[in-house]
Image (tube, rainbow over all chains, first blue to last red):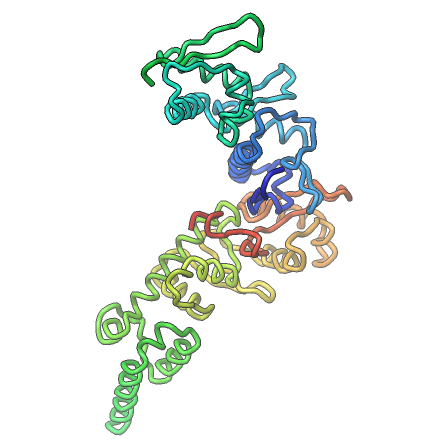
Length: 179
Length: 224
């Protein structure tokens, strides 16, 4: 999955895959896992995690350890409390990971628009997500839900106006004359 | 008496000449430095005794060990949340060397120990002690009793122990093993591992075992 991800030292140390009973140790453990989840998702541009899946993040084959479901929920839950993740369902099986905050995505979009002379220009949602212009940039492959939220922020700031075309494919934005 | 005084004075002068001539070697070469210390000890001279005076000024050697001491404290603080305030001396030296890489002034375990002994004198709660075959550096007030030392010693084999290991190798009743392990757990010196397929709980000791393998960039891991 892309170039080699650098796993931190604790990922190769078996006890970190067991929820620690001693509070101070557990606090440290939660901190480390929270950072790893964000880093991993950012590196692989993963927006959604299904907690039941044994993705490489939760399972280290080289030391034969994997996080229990309970542990996964605790660590993701800690991210949710901080606003860095969101549960997508009541059963807490699926979550959206904000490895980049929505307001930071808004800035990325704005910068992209400025860099490409998009003042007064128009782009559809799909073009932003999957088009040629954004290929190779941070915006390529951005999740649709996250993108729309970021655009709504920009709309509030008067930087874009969102529009809906005849079909879903026509959803898009017009960038204002002054970015 | 006078003869002895004269002889001592001659030794000291020779030592000072030697130090002046070989100042760079002393600074750059840990083996040379260790030999220099031996020579000093023979004459009853302690170049680290004071930060002022001839030795400190000539060699800046007081500064050198002071600097090491500060860096050692940094490393111990940075790794404390992982190892509970107990670190293998060899590992500490390795991390220290990595931290000083850019300076191109290699240091030895001997340098490390001298710097720590200065820290010990300052009463900063540092202590070097031996467990089994290894030397450990303690940077927290937690004192280990004999039972703990025994457990750490048998943990050196694989980095962890099971309750069974402790009971069998030390001939202890179950209660004693569990109590000691639980205490080490509470002190932050041990971590539990329930993930092995054999279902047995393992107690791992981060202070045993290495953080400084090639696979990791220890410096960035600990923000050294």
